[in-house]
Every structure is written in structure tokens, then in C-alpha cells.
Amino acid sequence: MKITKLTTYRVPPRWMFLKVETDEGVVGWGEPVIEGRARTVEAAVSELSEFVIGKDPSRINDLWQAMYRGGFYRGGAVFMSAIAGIDQALWDIKGKVLNAPVFELLGGRVRDRMKTYCWVGGDRPADVIAQIRARMEHGFDTFKMNGCEEMSIIASSKAVDAAVARVAEIREAFGNTIEFGLDFHGRVSAPMAKVLVKELEPFRPLFIEEPVLAEQAEYYPRIAEQTSIPIAAGERMYSRYEFKHVLERGGISILQPDLSHAGGITECVKIAAMAEAYDVALAPHCPLGPIALAACLHVDFVSWNATLQEQSMGIHYNKGGEVLDYVLNKDALKLDDGGYAKPFTGPGLGIEVNEELVIERSREVADWRNPLWRHADGSVAEW
Image 1 (tube, rainbow, N blue to C red):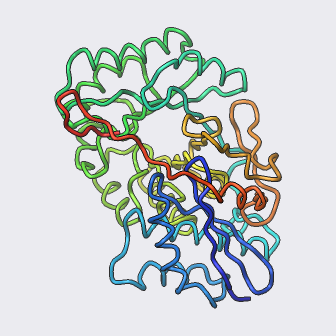
Image 2: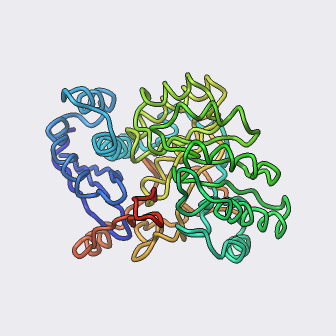
Image 3: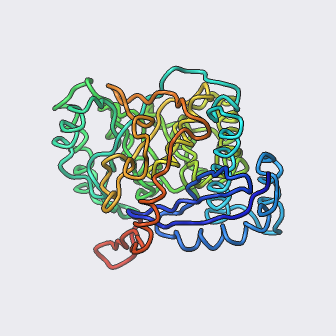
């Protein structure tokens, strides 16, 4: 069997799917994308195709190494996202050829179901109570929300009080009947992170995500020493080599690699094992589409330290396309009460992509961009 063609489809709301074809008619699907930079990753997929066209798709490890090491420059968001989508598609093909779910090819399950959580509150957290109540009606009890709006390097007490009041309101409304993580999205500087973790500690959030940017990772152990709240990070780290340095420093309690950014299934299984060796939990980042979610779940089902899985059904970004829109066998991604996902029963990634709808929606798709925020003084703020 040989790989014959790679085709990318940019689709709403902000995703890109990849179809990998073979000369024996077996097709695999992947999701290589950087939110807001889909065309850039599309170009990278096209350039990397020279390493896989005409090759045996079963040699996933060799193809991965060729894509990664075959160019002098490597790593980073663009290259690793392109590799990730191709890698996902290769595992999909392999599972279909062998008539087995990917998690079986990775050694088999370590759990019977996987806990997921959902987003509430939007970019600037608002209407959080109402949104939590609505999601609870659908069986969810674990959530994530943005912890604050833009915040200056030294922010006002008013900005801090607003963030803390929102969290206090959640605990007052729901007590400990729910759990929630706070995503600071890298909006907080190291000086303000120290203030916020102290103020938020009495409300016991499940975790604080990206209290500072990944490029300020040296602060993670310092922040961790100042709080009992677990620190989560990893969505903007792209290979085991970046995660290696973070794990060596310590401070991270929950690692969040993204299966569409950090080299795909092949790389993230290794990252998960590295995290387990450091007694660090795994909670893959996934605000993306169904293929990315399926890839995450296969890694979750073989990783003992997998704790939570992000999923984007109903997330505020999903305008013009929802996760299940592009899936024919929707029950494969059905979540049970409590937000649990069950193991896939179909071969490969376990989902059947609605190719007809993918093609139709890819014909006229707008380029998604995240907003550019500015502080009151006009300087650029972290989104």
C-alpha cells in the first residue's frame, strides 16, 4: 500500500481537515490546524507531503521522523501542527487496515470511560452562572472558563477584584456540586499571577491554566510554591523536547499537549508517558473539531495519568460549524451523564467523516482570526 494524495479542507468555524488517500482505497483523516493560521499550516502540509507521497502508510514512526528531521529547521507551532494532522491520518489508516481502534494498536485501554469538561463564559467571561446551569441540564459537572479579561503587567485592584468576584459567585451558587478550571490564557504577568493565586485559593478551582505564557515557563515552579491550586499548561508547547524542560523544572501538575499542535498521536503518547514519570496528570487541550477530539481520546484511553479531556461542543467559537456536524456516526462521540466519553468501537480513529459536508462547507469559508486586544493605554494586550 502506498500513499497517493493529501487534500486539505478549511471548514467553519476555524478548523482544517486533512484527507490522506492510498492506492488501495483506504483513507485516513487528520486535523492539522493552528487557530487563525490555517492557511500557513496548509502550506506546511503541502511541503511535508513530499516525505509521505509514495510511501507505505504503515511505517508511521519512520514517516514521523522523516517529516521532523528531514528539514534542517524543525519544531514550532506550524511544522508540528502539520505533522500532527498527517500523523493522525496515518493512524486512522493503520487502524482501518487492521480493523482495530487506534487505542488497541497502542496497547489497549487503561480505563473504561474518559471524563470530559466543557467551556462556559466566552472570551471575556460573562453569563457564567446561566451557562453552567444550562450545561448541568445536559449532565455536565466539570467546566472551564477564562479567568479574567486583559490584564496589565501590574493591574489594578479593580481588575483583580472582578476576577475573584466571578469565581466567588460560582462557588456561592453551586458549592462543591461542580468543579471548574480557570484559564488565564497567558493574559497575566508573573507579578499579577502571584496576587491572583493568593486571592483565588479559598475558592479551590480545579486548576489554573497558563497563569503566565509558555515562554515564561521558568515562573511555573515559583508560582506553584505560592499556592495549593494545581497549575496546568502545555497548549503552546509543541514537542517532547519543550515538555522535557518544563517537567524538569517542576511546578506543573497538569500537562495539556494539543493533539493537533504537538506532533499528533505518535508524539503525544510519548509526552503522556514523560508526564506520568514525573507524577503529572494529562489533560489534552482540544478546542477544535471531531478528528482532533477523537485523536485525544485514543491517547487518553491508553494513558494512565489522563485525568480530563477538553471538548468544544457548544463552545463560543463554534459559529457556522459544530463538532458533530462533520461526523456521520455521531454516537461515537456521544457523552454520557457527567460528560464521560466511551471507547470507540470502529476501526482507526473511530469516526466517519461526512466528506460531502466537508467539501460543501470548504468552498466558501472565511479566515478566522482571534481578536487583537489593547490595554487602556493603547498597548497590545494578550488575548
